[in-house]
Length: 100
Image 1 (tube, rainbow, N blue to C red):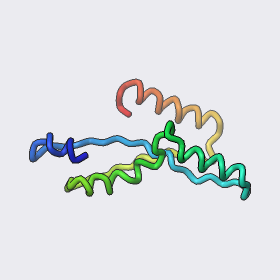
Image 2 (image 1 turned 45 degrees about the vertical axis):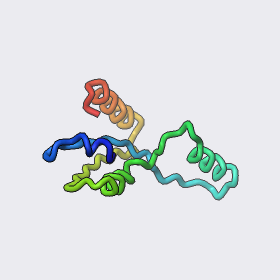
Image 3 (image 1 turned 90 degrees about the vertical axis):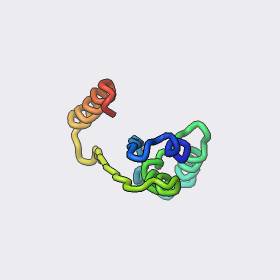
């Protein structure tokens, strides 16, 4: 972030898009499930699924000012199968158009 800031003009704008897949998972207090989750989070081949919530701090630490954060939350709780498929189809269409 600091390197990019050096390349920006004084009135330049930086746009950062991040996906934060952090989620709440409810399960029985089972050692096997806990081990699977811990191994997943520590695996070097897995990206930081909670990166989005760290962006503001990362930008502040890189001396950015006037930081505007926008959030789009998609939730599948209480959606029918058909509604979930529509949500995924919409996201895939936007991604194919380069919008997300």
